[in-house]
Amino acid sequence: MPTIDPEILELIQERFPQISEPALQEAIASVGKLQSVTQGSILMDYGSYIQYVPLVIGGSIKVVREGEDGNELLLYYLGEGDTCSMSFSCCMTQKRSIIRTVAEEDTTFVAIPIEYVDAWMRDFTSWKNFVMTSYDNRIYELVQTIDSIAFKKMDDRLLEYLQRKAELKGTNKLSTTHQDIAYDLNASREGISRLLKQLEKNGQVKLGRNRIELVNQ
DNA sequence: ACATTAAGTGATT
DNA sequence: AATCACTTAATGT
Image (cartoon, rainbow, N blue to C red; front, top):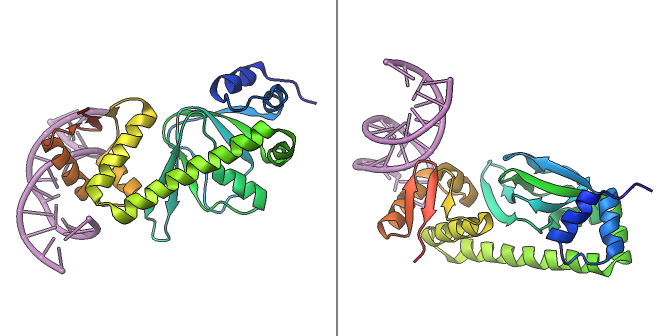
């Protein structure tokens, strides 16, 4: 039996209050590995099998879907206290990943080897609840994203995107390029530039090279 | 100073 | 709204 890592134990208690059972906390601290990745690292890619389930401690991860032509589309973000629901369903059903996850910023997480994930569903109710709640949140966000694509015009999508991003990062000053936004929204860079210009005219944002500031109104 | 990268523009479909 | 074919501006070396 591996020893309990006190650092992980503390982080879990601090960032994942839903995981309340002490025995579960200790189990996580025993088998989990604390990992850090730099911005832009790909944690999981199309077709790969999942080896672990990540519990996000700090930073954020974006989950994207890519078409055959290389077009990308942002599905949702994972932030502190979140976990990747896709990795659950993948490891439960032994299927390859149908999405890609990329570190949106420098990110740390606790990696749980998949062999424990299943057993804990039986053994710990707080784990089961955590997983279910996580699914629920992710599906809710997915539906919002679908709504946004299906029913909203690009300018609304853009504003929504910026607001979510600002919320996730905890700041109104975003450092990103028009091109990156265009990739996430699967739009053209020029289109995004023009829409941002409009938003600036309306006093909703302030623009600079590599930075977009949301103006509270 | 020069090269590179981000952003802006206008025309076309 | 996308694409093209640029121009202009900011930034790194």
